[in-house]
Image (cartoon, rainbow, N blue to C red; front, side):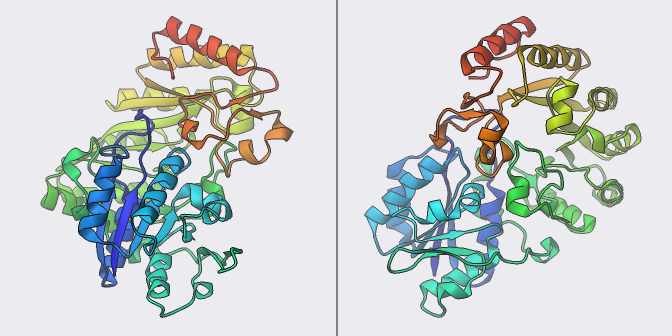
Length: 426
């Protein structure tokens, strides 16, 4: 069976939506190709949504199934792509997956141009769905699938048990135009979610907090392949919290010695999941950059949304800069309990971390579906200003709080950004 996998694009690129290989699609492509299917990948983040380009691929490849990967910001483009596919040939089976469909599966499955939704991990669900399309099984037999009956009723099958990541084929990077990516060699060291349940993050909703690390050996084997076959000199570990398990990181560093310093790497993590010794070890084994999600400079706010200490953030930045790492600290505003005073505290702390050598990333807090900020908006005093998913890019204010109007937040951000010489968010 011929399967075309499309990565729905963002409308506006930003540091939070950089052009990077879609690893999720690459994993899916490898799995269904190994199952005997013919697969192509179309990453529209390279060009933006160009209907003519989509039409050319549909005409040339004649897929029987089109899978569209999407998150909240890209969902409007995903819908447009689905509509174009059905207009091209109504007989093509259209499947959607990714974070947004996994969180709102019934809503997405209810779209007229969507036949199926794959929830959470998609490898085995997509493989078995090919049997459904071929008439070899019925949709009710496929775990992790959401579908419509002939009468239009939405059926949500039970979720599939999560896979052992060491059993999966490596991503099919040969199907991606690697030369067009700013960060061409991303590596995922674990499957599943973060065990923390930050109210602004939907990861725990999708993965139920279960973290499944790969073996350090398998990770280094993959990096070695990237160095050998693709000439990679830098890889980025795309995990939410790379240093979640300290013992695992230490073992990985031992395995990295096999590479003989052939590759440098970067990662992201929490400030309370590092220590000075660990950072030095990482730096001695090729780490050149690290990003911390600090989020707020008010301890009161951090206590309510993150559970970290400002001193821990300051220590982590100092240790990382001292080790020679490019160090980035990310923040977001506003949080539900933010006041003008706590926002000023945040920007004061931003200035302090910048003076310690950190680069700063700023974004607007966004109540993504699946987060507590979305599900409990009324209780938290959040007013959601729009359900236009295309605006959910963390660069537009789509919410205001009981204490701060959107106009007031924007005014404070503009004033403080100018004072600190930061780039304004939107």
